Length: 291
Image (cartoon, rainbow, N blue to C red; front, side, top):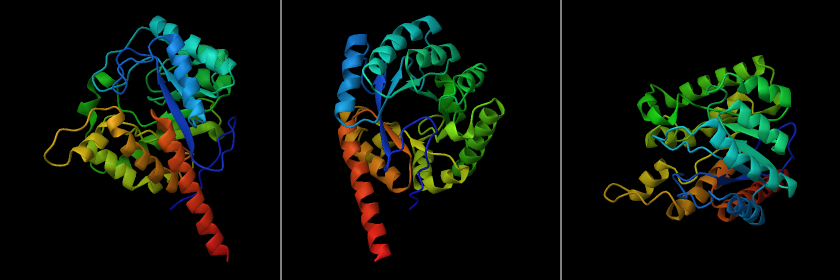
C-alpha cells in the first residue's frame, strides 16, 4: 500500500482520494448514451454529482470510446463552454476533458481549473503552451493515438514498464513546454490502446506508476475490462452502464488504498463511499502502528 497521494498545486488538498464525476455532453458516449447532451441537463447532472460526493466535475464534449470519430472544434466548444461556465459560476470545481488547445483555453476562461487531456498533449501541439500560459493543472494520460484506431495499438511486451516509460516521456514534454511539474497529474489510460489483460496488469501494479512522482488519476469507470471480468468465461459482458457501477466502486476502493490522488467515475455515490472507507482503514492502520 502507498498512501502518498501527493498534492496538486492550484487545487484543494484532500485528506483522501478525491472523486471526479463525469459529465459527457455528447450524443454518443459509451456509458450513458447521450443522457446529458442538453446543456441544461448537463449542468443539473453536474450539480447532482456534487451533491452525491464529487469533488471535481469533468466536462467533456467529444466521445473517446473505441472507434469514435472526432467532432469539429466549433461543435465541441458549443457543447462544453456553456456547461463549464454555469457549473463554475455555481462554485463547482470544474475540469475540462479535451484534446484541443482552443477548447482548453476557452474553458479555463469560463472557469475550469484543470485540463484533462486524454492525449497528454499529443493530439494538439498547441495544448502544452496554452496550459502553461494558463497556469492550471494538467492531466498527462497514457495515449497512443486517436480512438478511431487505438485498438490496433494495444501491443506491448511489458505493459506496465512501457506505460510508465511513455508517461515519463509525456511528463518531460509537458515540463519542457513550460508546465510546472507541481501541476502535473498522470493517468495510465485504462482502455486506451489496451485490452482487458493490460488494464488488469496496470491495476495490479499501480505502485509502479508512483515511480513517476506525480499524483495519480485512475479512470476505470464502466470500462471494457470490467465487463470482461463480470462476464466470466461463458456469458456476455454487461452493458457499459449501471450494471458495471459496483465493479467500478471496487476499483475505486483499490485505487484509493494504493494511493491514487483521484478516481474518475460516472456514478459518484458508491465511489465516494469507497474512498472514505479506504481512508478510515488507513487511519486505523496508522493508529495501530503508532500504539
